[in-house]
Length: 125
Image (cartoon, rainbow, N blue to C red):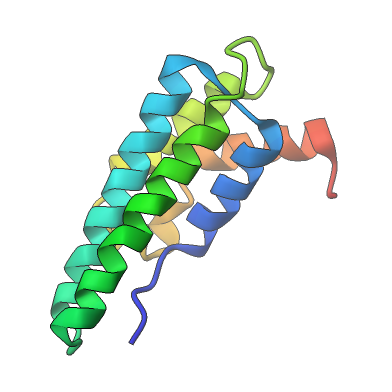
């Protein structure tokens, strides 16, 4: 069985990539969130009845996800209108427990504000 990642987390990653954020705060926030997601995914994998080989395959995939996310957000300038909102969203999600990340609670107030700003800035495209 595949570990579940919060749907709005993936949507937030996509919006962050669309913004193309950069600088240290956003890279740190992205890395912190990604490490949290990775930790939660590995904990979920540990609960599943998977072979050791499958578990070993998951680790590099999760590591690559974090490296990819960090490289994408490093391109965003700190003066971008969505920069602070993106950082706040990622930090609010990082503060959640794994259980909360897999529930509706993952749609934090900071992420709702970020989504609203993204819609105002980029429309529904």
